[in-house]
Length: 444
Image (cartoon, rainbow, N blue to C red; front, side, top):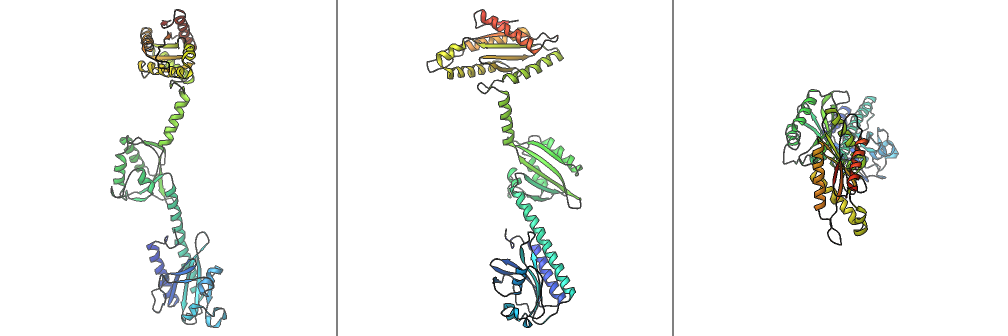
């Protein structure tokens, strides 16, 4: 943003008043605010006084021009010239050619220390400026530099808001939108045509229509409206289109600490949540088959044992092993063997309930824990799995083939039996099934 672009109409109007008051108070026909626009200097504001030959927008090149203002810009300090005709330094000064022989001016600095331009007063006759006039000029310059500092902060804040990953909206106590960045409107899919952007009640209604938990959304807003001093950290909001947002908010205070409303920050964390879910899935599931891995299965089984012990509910555990799996790998190859393992998991998951935990314990060995399931029901579930596996055609480059499984079933005894003891009983039943000829269920 250029120096001229950052000056608002309100500021330009204030500066016009400053220049007019300065000219009348000091008693000169010419008061100017100039702006450096390299390689030129431009008249930004000209006093509306009789006899002022300058008009806003007039430009002249810098660099050896001889203008009074160029000397100020170069030296970055106040310059007072009572009568240029008595000072040979100003021979050839274009201002003198206008007849402006007296000059008083100061540099106007940007917050970063660069020169914005000048504030100056000129007259067609010799003028020895009083200390009061010089003091007034310095104070008016301070006011102008204060405006520039404010505009600079606003420009930096706007730039920061526009590059922020957050959608930001600030609202006063009358539900008027004080500030909102572009990302906020994009995040909530608000267009200028869809609703009045400065009416937060309309914006809020639009936001509410896109939230799954509208009652919770309303409750938070009502609570924070009644407690404007409270801050909110990291609330997660699910949207109807599947996205997930994270919300932070705090009271909107000025430098004196006075509350004027609330500022809200919304960030799209959909990708983050999906990545987290993927990491959790990878941490808890076998990479090949998608079944729970041994560690996670054991955690779930331990929780189910504790629940069974607490509430007295029955629980069954199944240990399952593919019969002669080495022959599958030797005959059809390890790639087909991997496909067999994945197909087995699908078959078992289609038979087991959502509440049942199914995991790969190692190699071709799997286990299932069945909550609220007595021994007889556990045996029935195991028989359904055994039959479904035997009837499921496996595929290979050499053609379809079938496999069988052996399953051991054990019911949790309670009375302090540990998970290891329960697994050991189910494992013994499994090996008994193997010893009896495979493709069968044995319960202990």
